[in-house]
Image 1 (cartoon, one colour):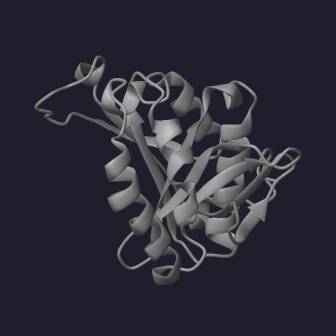
Image 2: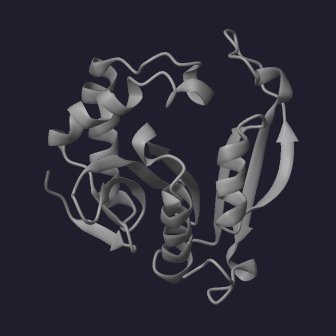
Length: 190
């Protein structure tokens, strides 16, 4: 598992994905609890990860340097924990914050730690003017992470899905943080 390191926190190392990481992502997306608020627990097929997702992730690093999806490793052990993302808009002025962690990494504050680090990176290094994220309204844990990372709830909205998963009826939520509202010295942003 090699790849360029984007940043490190006290407990995390975020590095570029490579073609060698397909099995890690297949395993992550194969856990029904990890995928509960995304697909209702259905796994992402290995062919989709191998032939679509990983090539798109790897190609994105050159389009918008400093933005993209990053493998999250335990800094002490090197163990793969999941991923964090700043997925760029077409012009790179906005980035969607995202994260997906393996269950053993849950409940340890790692999602908040990685999200705060990426928010800081987005505004201080990547030149982004807006960081935003969406999740299901019923995903209380993810909403808490977004708030702790400094993003604010801006709207609740309802989408139509042909095959909705439980909780869809409560809608989706969007959170954001604008560059002008970001305070690098605010509590929890270091």
